[in-house]
Length: 168
Image 1 (tube, rainbow, N blue to C red):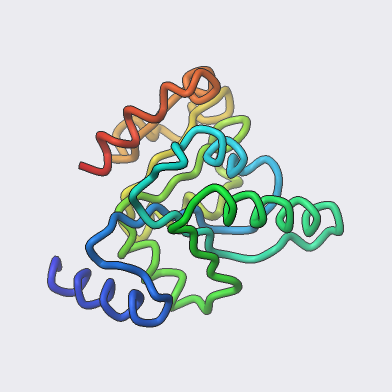
Image 2: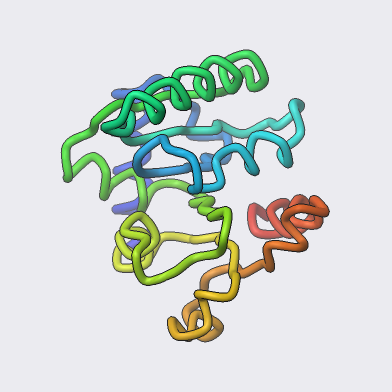
């Protein structure tokens, strides 16, 4: 399995100009509000020595497109190792979920059953770090292997030490 992941990482590294020696932190899905991408942008340090990869597509609404344009501009400015992967095919999406060291999904109100990015990542066996809130309890994620952090701790930026630990 590790050989397959390393092979996939090399393939993706060549395709997207990524360094296989660096950690890959991925945020997959639509670039819209409510998915917590703005939380990530404010909680990760600018000195991050990992690739920060935003993969997916702009939302369908004009407000979503404006949000994503501003977001992408801010991330490019903040992180020297920022990588944008727009509208990948299903096979590439799955490979990135598997090849990434950490998939960050800190939803603004916590994860719920409506979050397809989380379900895709979990079904692929990705290393997922997500937020929990009042809608998360029925999912029974505590035994899933995902890193879980409360919304309050995200807001207090207590997530950063846990993210670092997850990357070790």
